[in-house]
Amino acid sequence: MREYLIKRIIQGIVTVFVVVSINFFLFRAMPGNPFMRFIESQPRGKVKEMVDIYIKLFGLDKPLWEQYLIYMKNLLVGKFGYSFRQVGVPVSKIIMERLPNTLILMGTATTLTIIIGIALGVIAAGRRGELADISTVIIGLTLYSIPIFWLGLVFILVFGFWLGWFPLWGMLTPGKYFSNPFEYAVDYLWHMTMPCTVLVLVSAGGWALITRNALLDVFTEDYILTARAKGLDERTVFYKHALRNAMLPLVTMIALSFGFIASGAVLTETVFSWYGIGRLLYEGTMQHDYPVVQAAFFMIAVCVIAANIIADILYAYLDPRVKY
Image (cartoon, rainbow, N blue to C red; front, side):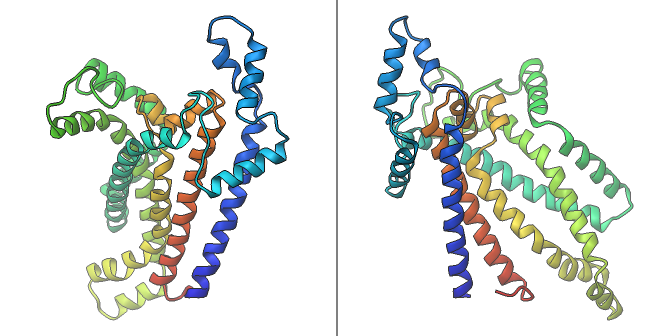
């Protein structure tokens, strides 16, 4: 077990190194100058001179290999540099301002998605061919096929604009004074209801279909036939033998889903103006803010790779048939 764990950690470190290297070169291959849009929005002046000043200030006048070494050296000591767009503001400060909002939204949505999706999948598999199964498959496929940004816009139009049940955008009511943390939390959750619901609706259908198919595959195994031949009742066969083994492939999916929490939901956060990591990635990409986007991608890569390692260890622990 120790050798397997060490091997997976080393593989994870190598993977992070490769991802970080690609992360560095990818954004520098993008067309355009990261400072032009910022400078052109300022009063007219000597644009070229200002661009040259910013390029020298952020070290972009150095050779690419030297920039890469500086970038890797700073990462090792936890420095992500300064934002190109918000000059003088550390990237780590920008990330930490957005990260809690993403963790709350995505953490809630992911947890609800997994619980609801697996529950619906279990019900559908247990009643194969019946109305519950057919309805779950149709609804699941329909929701899974709907573009999340389109569903978000529909929610804003219907529940926000027409009915007025929920706010149209943002995380808090502008200008509202909160006398205590409870009022703040209520207003925050009120704004989070629509984006969270959209995320759950689109994702839960896929989880339901995967759980259903995993259970149906397990039903064809010989040990299920043996359990029934031993005279075990159908409930025991379903929950003790079928569901227990069908959950094994879902372990990896669950771990990766929580690993991707830090990445946010780019489309959902953009549609609902939710100031999280997803919206930050969109803004940083559009504004050529390399340090911000690189730091966000680095954080996402580390979380996903760590979740993958944890999933592999859990899988090997839960299934004795898997060899280390």
